[in-house]
Image (cartoon, rainbow, N blue to C red; front, side):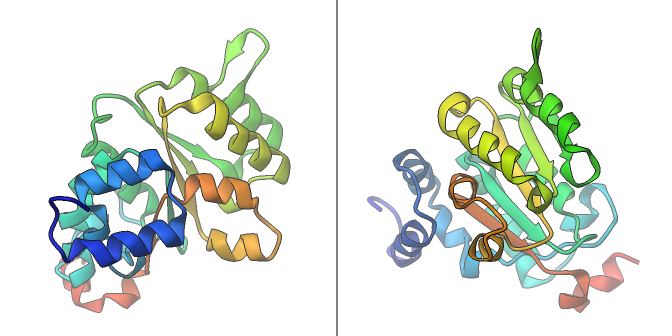
Length: 219
């Protein structure tokens, strides 16, 4: 990591081995020294069901760490996975990343995969004859796919193909999941290929009960 603090180097190597970054992602992470900000796989805390900036409210070490990491995390502009229990504010964390990124002037789209039937998800994401889907027409945008762990195997395969062939960095995809996707891969419930294409960076958001020192600021 030329020109970076020596403290960056061990974490940088660990992240590359663990996540299997593409060369483009490695270059981006090197530029922003992301690995110093991904302490312990970026275990971040959410605030619960409150919207807006409430998910970023607190004085705990993990909240402070995320606020420090946020600009670099946003400007890295690679796919990422946000994992956390229901109510941990995953969409708010995704929005915060979008607002601090170079895509902030563009739209932030949310697709609730868990609540939509498969045909509707497919039409929404990939379009239909004579009509572009959200992914094709959202150049410069961030698309947050909530409930990635509920996506059907067929659409997992199609999304993996789109990320590899059609996207080219035009859209930033953030995947939200209640279940850890690496565990779902080991159980044969989630596509390993899609996981590898999404998991360039991963955020884990523990529930509010894990950072009780922040509760007085949220009530």
